[in-house]
Image 1 (cartoon, rainbow, N blue to C red):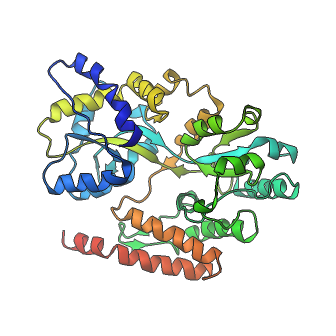
Image 2 (tube, rainbow, N blue to C red; image 1 turned 45 degrees about the vertical axis):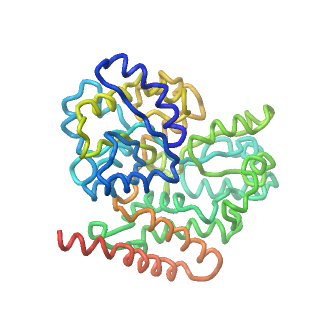
Image 3 (cartoon, rainbow, N blue to C red; image 1 turned 30 degrees about the vertical axis):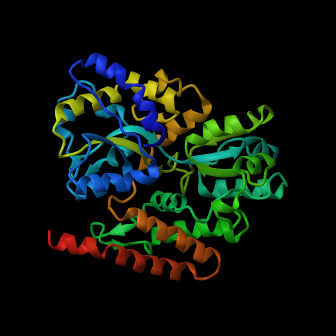
Length: 389
């Protein structure tokens, strides 16, 4: 999908040279069409042998019975070393007790911040706890260095889900049959999150209302924002040379600061094999090839994506770059979102709830109760299927 589909075509000639009996045809498609196209292919019994699979899609396609388990292939492989993968990313591909995807590149979110603005108010080391973090944001505002301590677009869900997971909230209960957002642990995280808006630390705006993220970051409109690894290249490209030493990336704080970094979300893409493939042996050889550390490093050079294997990081010179090193630290403490096919619908309801509460249309308790009711309705079909399995 996307740019990865273009980049991987440049790697295929070497694979075909090493495997002279195999020919590979790569079909590139936009991310916006990929999910529907794969579903249509499955229904029409016209799936490819291998697909790039967004990690949150794996449970859905596994539920349909579309994917081949990879456990046996991994056990027999001399290329795939399970200990070389980030454990939280690996777990996104495990449904039940079986593996249905091999991590290809990884993604997570952490904090980008104006270190010069924070240093000017005496904050010279990254905060480790929520309390220290909040205090730092207040200081940078009161010191007049930034208008807002942080940008948290109201139409994004990963941030509040991350805070809930840091508190140990399960999000769903009874085997993913019901919502559990009224759980005291999620309620505590929700209160912290909402307070950043209500106390004027974060602006009550959606991402659509930010005309140019990079210009506003440069101007000091906000001192922090949370995003993924693609922003490293964007900041280096879009900010002037005079600003390149003024920003940095840091892992997320944790609620009490005792564990560091705090948990973030496990993201990225994996390589999955369709159960209907008639070329499983050859398909696995290609998956192995693309999983070799040297190929992972080459893929990083072509795309800027972060490698799924830690041994590829020094090959790609990512472990000596302060900005990408922050991601390496964060990736060692990531966790998957709930492994239910309905997750993306649930996530939409989460940020809608945040917007309602922040805009004063519901109290925190009312918002979370309504969220649980919405999620229970979303999961109704799942409950029926599990009851009649």
